[in-house]
Image (cartoon, rainbow, N blue to C red):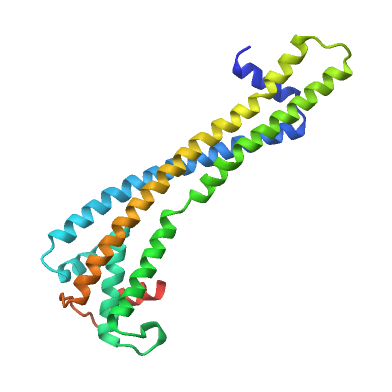
Length: 243
């Protein structure tokens, strides 16, 4: 019999526990591949959009031009979001000063806190799905192993109740029970590889974002001109209110 036939026969002979464990592994596999595909698509889109924004940022004549660009195009990637947040904070503090605890401190201190909040928010977005991948990668082999142990137990129990046992009678059920361990590894290995790849990609993005934040902070605190919008401008209110 091939693998499919062995698996079908194993499930047909399994009790509710074995079938539940198989269903759990199947659900974990579906969830793992969902996160893998979504994270890969999000990463590709983010890299393309970040490259476009950074090119536009460094090609701009001034921060005022960048601010107008961000007012026309809502930020949809980490670097644009950080720049939008920082410029809105600079505008807000220049227009209103420090009248509340939220704006306490000098302009540079207020800008530092605002940029740190923006980076923390982007970090949380980048880490979406990683906890699920890590959990699947660490638990799937044990779920498969438990399924194998349970299957071997029932196989030996059935053989014992049947009286004399030959090698064929033992090898078949035990071999089928080992399928669960293989399934657990098949679920865990892609999740481990995807988690490591995503974690490394996130570290690289955050390192670049941190370096970009230092450059942006320097521009904003050394007198680079940014037009101060009227007090009723929704940009600063939205950004600071959501921080």
